[in-house]
Length: 134
Image (cartoon, rainbow, N blue to C red):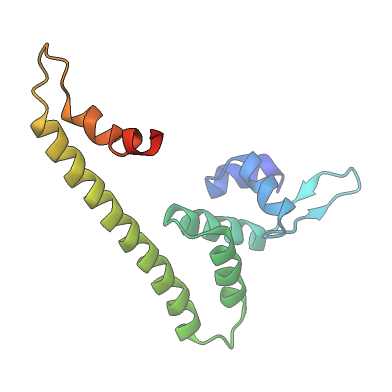
């Protein structure tokens, strides 16, 4: 398959596929004319990568997951450890986002949103600036 076909079938843009080749996640063969020739195994890897990336796995996690996928003697505990690490990062990010949401909800509620110049949102954003300037 040429890159256009594998892009269509995998759902990944050709630019992403070329990037994955550049970082050695996939290694399609080259024809005599220099064009990439993707095999079904390349398509499967690209589809795998697309799904893993859509779940937010890092490139390095994807590299490790692909290696484990290819290793028939793998231990599922190794796969689970990667997924658990990623899940922990997601949960941490969610906690950060919830804290941001709570702060912004409070500030928006406190702001009158009228013609007066005082705004608790700006005051909060500027907190500490006056002290640092001294």
